Image 1 (cartoon, helix red, strand yellow):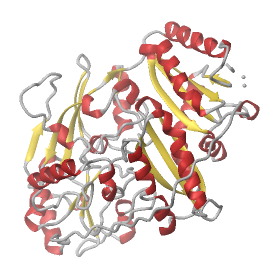
Image 2: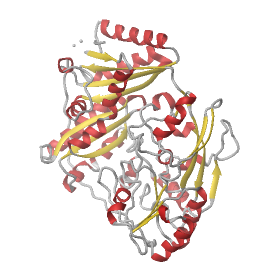
Image 3: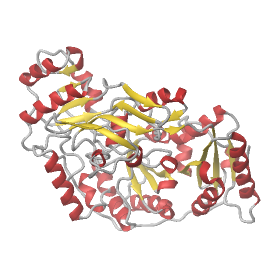
Image 4: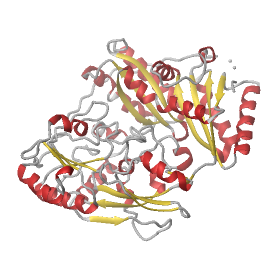
Length: 509
């Protein structure tokens, strides 16, 4: 179904800034030795140990997927990767590392975007990829208990016959692990509908930095007995302990889903459109995603699909994808069709045109465009990614100001910065600002930082909406947290991890 109207663009500028930050110095931590490897071999079988140290025969190339992030931006030098299968094995490994002052990096699917899952130097990597058991699922309460290494898509597949879904959906769902999702407090595409993991996670099993197993793997919906300790580990990025098990409230699977991609003549129409969509769709609205024109064109260019014919894209400055999920198809389709009719017949239309999915294949194809934006940007060049929270009316202003700043620096050219694009989750105020460059260079980074962080702070926003702090943003934490907050975060870290072994160099400056 197609829906048809035009636009303008504003430019902003900001004075130049200078910025520099360096790799953390991991003082007081030791490298893994052959003696340590011998001890680990008493805990794990040879098949669960990868090491370049003697007597293991692992090549350096075999460790590259663990030492490097998927964007190939962050590079560790770990000699050893351990793959425990149980929480007891994790506990024994961590206990030894704490005694020996060996830095530990917990690693899930290694799909992070801020360098939080790879070593800063040669810390030991503990991969959770062998911990893949679903421990239990109650199809009455909807409570799922699973090992931290379970891949998100695998849990989705497991729940499907039980008519439930994981209340989290990410573009990296085929690789990311539920423990990593929890540790980074991943947001995803449907936070608008299901909320954050701070609400849906009921309990955690965590190995603390001294090897103690903290078992808070409750399956209770209500438990008002003192401090809710699990919340400290949600979003802590493995700096306070290793999440080994997760109890999470699965959501009932929608019986009917649909989506529509709408082309808007100008960004200023996004906010009133969102207001109208919420009013008319109400309880069945499950996603409202924003894409600017440039990033949409990159998705088409790099084969992520095409929502609209070229002639229907003319005059569009941006696009939104609206998804509905409900219990009765006829009811949902009636509400969605009424919405589209009212948008088209309005005296001052908010949209130019649009396309409504009419089959499961088209539904998936429209989502593929949105989910493929990260891949399209990566195919175009090296991306500086800023995952920020700012007021919705400022989304396009942030992109425009950043582009103009880069232009004033003389870097907006084919061999430096090729594009500055924005897309994100309108429902929770999360903008993904991507600066696409020909290569990662210190000159471009110096132009972007702290400019972007200062810009975000000027809107009282957050420098990390859902990706976390990792290694990338430790120096910028001050733009979102005041000195008192940072001081108490450091006190909590010191209490849990006095030897500083757990994911060192991450989150805290």
